[in-house]
Image (cartoon, rainbow, N blue to C red; front, side, top):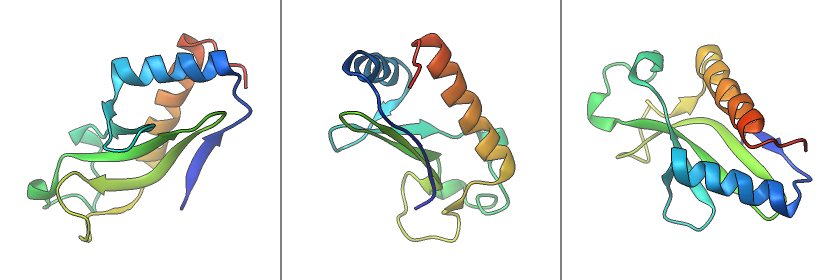
Length: 110
């Protein structure tokens, strides 16, 4: 799995990130899992023509001392479809901007 990982989080940093996720992301079914929605205007070629598979998102997993952001664009309704693909350059840039904003807002130095 391609992902962006931030590790060596202190307990305080981890708690700050969890608070940020609870305010800004959708919770997943598993503890520590969240969904980062992909704006419709950033849907790539793989997602075009697959409106029924939307909305699309990228997964986020929060562990005890790390957070991992998946670089895989997933369908909210379909597990096996050609619209599920690794993030395009534009989608990766969006993810990086979200992560950078979170790090600044939550004062994460890890």
